[in-house]
Image 1 (spheres, one colour):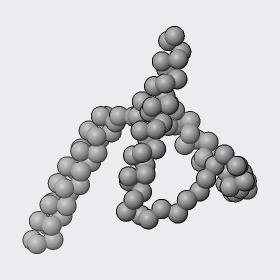
Image 2 (cartoon, one colour; image 1 turned 120 degrees about the vertical axis):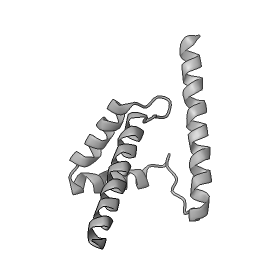
Image 3 (cartoon, helix red, strand yellow; image 1 turned 180 degrees about the vertical axis):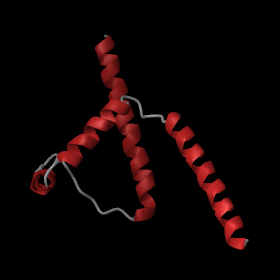
Length: 101
């Protein structure tokens, strides 16, 4: 009897979680300038690369003088990501405003 009840509880929790996941997937929001098609294209690009292509792309990034790699303490990563997102959004807004004029 105990196993039966546990199974029912797990089933209900699983069903509820699936329902919540499906609902949140319907409400997916993307950052400005992004959409589902763009995400799918980027995923397809990275998933279709061979290991050699991935290594070459990573090496090219390290060799690119316009890129900087930094070691950041884990607790500061969210703050750095937020700053980068704000900077990218400002650049996008600036580009959009220049297109209008």
